[in-house]
Image (cartoon, rainbow, N blue to C red):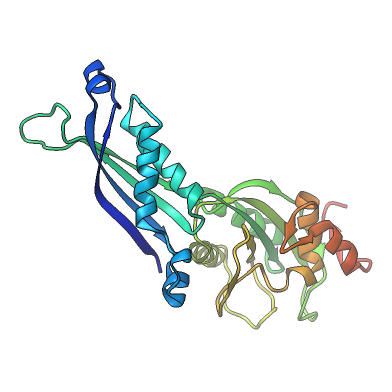
Length: 281
């Protein structure tokens, strides 16, 4: 579900433009703003403090316009979008349209303008595992699809680890890895993308904690907290799983998730010989 807050045809007067007459005399701009956000918290609690206030959207646009002048309306639109994302953490995407009704245009047109669309980038961590078929190739394929389908812009990927099965020990050993990066998707969009990629790599339904060609778990997305039947963030079992903590500590040992530092959690958990070993060791 994607809720939206919008304002239309906000009229501002500014000295933006390339031509001397535009900057000297100023001109009228019409601005539309549309924000994608989950509005259920404010609607459920009837709480104004949790809302994305359209009055504040108007104020932001006016403040940014007053901070000019800008030569390009593209600059004006982008600055407004950036300011809204900075002000409202709940907003996952913002669209800003800037129109110039007074621009010199052919007779058949009454407006010219631009549309600026920006999505919030959020920090994300993933765990990947495989214990069927070509385990290494399965993980490499999943990582490649996550990248090429623009699900995650990776900045760190751990080595591959050979790990003992967890939950159901009567199965083949796993290859596991962790990765961190950035995503512009909502948690629900990331989950759908991961499920689709798992299917592409060859995962089929099986018993819980059973063998699988690929498993992609979302460990965290920023500091978002979700407790639902399909998705829990941060991942409910990440601090109990050595096959998650060890690869994650390799690339993000200083990372704190819900106040728990990953490197410290590895020490707390303790490891037995053969639990988690680098595959190339």
